[in-house]
Amino acid sequence: MSTMTAAQSRTRTYDMVYIAVFAGLMAICSWISIPTTVPFTMQTFAVFAAVGILGGRRGTLAILVYLLLGAVGLPVFAGFSGGMGSIVGSPSGGYLLGFLFSGLVMWGMEKLWGRKTLVLLASMIVGLIVCYLFGTAWFMVVYTSKSGSVGLMAVLGWCVFPFIVPDLAKIALAMLLTKRVGRYVQ
Image (cartoon, rainbow, N blue to C red; front, top):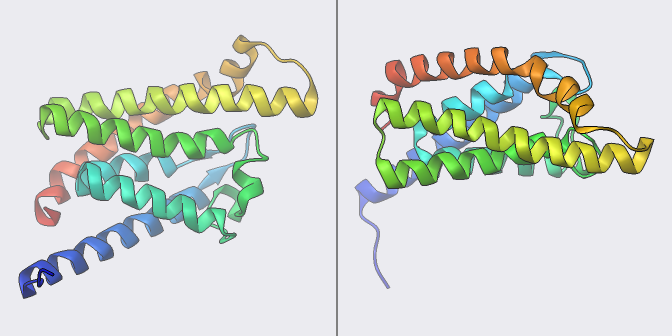
């Protein structure tokens, strides 16, 4: 059995605090919301900031903690909602789960190519595309099961096209924050 040094214990404590803080930031950013078919929120900013500032492992864990808090019923999602129904039963629930896949992709890119600025920017863009793909597919399945058939272009018009420019602005903001704050958290 290995014993943990004081420095290792302190590092783990800091890791848990950072993960909790960013899970809380995701909740707060979800409450900044404009209700639409898929609500406009600041969640994607918080997801990108978490992975950018904390790194792939801790950032992805923060996303997972956020999703688990919502899954057990805490009102951490847009519109102060929570519970499994907000994920599984909601057409927009796939975008929530897409955050986790975004984090995993960003973490993978970090492992492969490091934390250089260009790699981080590319990973955020690829992570956004992954979230769009997963969320759109989920939306189509859930929406079709509840309301009938819907075409891909209609769903893209509701769920992706209106979000592209705001999400790119959120990536820019997350990149700026990562460069300003990230060095203090590493």
